[in-house]
Length: 631
Image 1 (tube, one colour):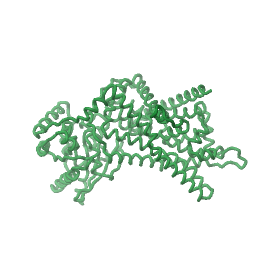
Image 2: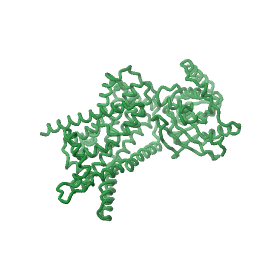
Image 3: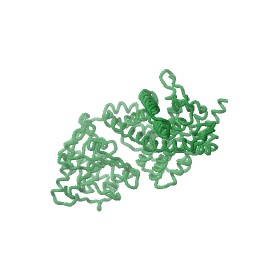
Image 4: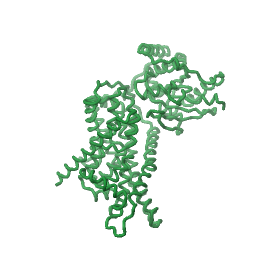
């Protein structure tokens, strides 16, 4: 293939939020995807590829959703800059596929008119055509194509309808320019300027003219959407419905994964017995049993719970409910100085604070965005889930309350609620005293409810499970080997009266730090776990698994880590430990992302300091209050 052809292999998917752009990207590229970050920013870069029937390999870039090239948020700025070729070492795409919701063409067509100013070939993918036709929407596609001067392809991305036609249209555009003898597809970026308000109004008039010329038939809004919204967006029933949904999610996180967890625990136990029976005593056996399996296995057992949590989050996103939840929370969040759009980043932070912080880019106002970033880690991320589950299983009996609620699930719900309430309190303080400014109203488009795509949900679960298991196989495994070494060497002297770990490097470090943590009820074993927990919160569970496998009494170790902790800790210590984990900033990658997102070390330092202060103060208060009440 000539160099000329090689330069014509890249397209960008551009479209409004909730238009099905990512579903189209998945349909085009399948498993041939890779995710990274754009150079110099933390905006996620999603790229894939497909091969046309003629054998051409085409790279596909999925850009963040935008309503206009008049970028008003970091996300939209990335889309604008990529389309215009303004990123360093990032060439312009050779063609643009603009994805539009067939039931809401006004905003999609306005974006097409803006994109045409760039001068690159444009293909309009009219997505969700099945929904549009079902509701009575119709338009003459041939006239529409002539009016906008671009090929129009009807698609149903989740069913892969229209994908072959879209691939053929892309191939045709590239072939046209190769046959013309030009070295590259021309562009007009040098003359592109951000449209002024007057031009935007002109775009809207032109869209109306085009729709009229193309004989657009206006359909009816979904009756189910109207009926559901009459309840789910009600000022009272809507809030109660949201709380009920969250309650069900947290109950499910404890109840549904029980059987898979038992299978994983049995598998880990059988693996330990098998290795223990076949290997002779020595350093390698100790490393495998007490370091790798005890440490990493203590984290892997929580994979079913993390998958359950992600399943519900993905399900709510795919149905269109998440936007409603943001709308419902706008008034409550506005009362503490948060923008309504902050709800989505905060909800994303329940999975992990990193994507939550990154998704705050959709908030236009810088101060509102900073407040959202600073409180996102207070949301209970999935990395805390192993810690919470471990302590709850050790100290809270599993009983049924009120005839339907599980006691352990209620405690988990309370921990999540505590994180949310303190996040709102911190936001109020920041907005009132440090990051003052006007409160901006929430303006957003609510998508139509739709049945979730099982394929998209399962793919999302696979991606998230893979990330968690990869962390267990890399970061956690490496940390466990280090902790095992520190807990094993130097070995105990011949006349030792204490467990061997007391004489090790880990024992020395733990006892050195213990006086600082003693006022909040933490022992030296906890001190050992907290230090590597800075790499990732769930490492603390793996570290405790290794430490207690080496130092715990044999009966407790045989029964599992929860039993070891129940034997060794008081209730006051356990509650203080949970309190610590509600607040503590024990995640170095999160701090690194805050630094990159704010382009300053000041804000991650502020975050680390205030969260550490809250963690120590809260744990101190809970430990001493519990001790007093139990005395």
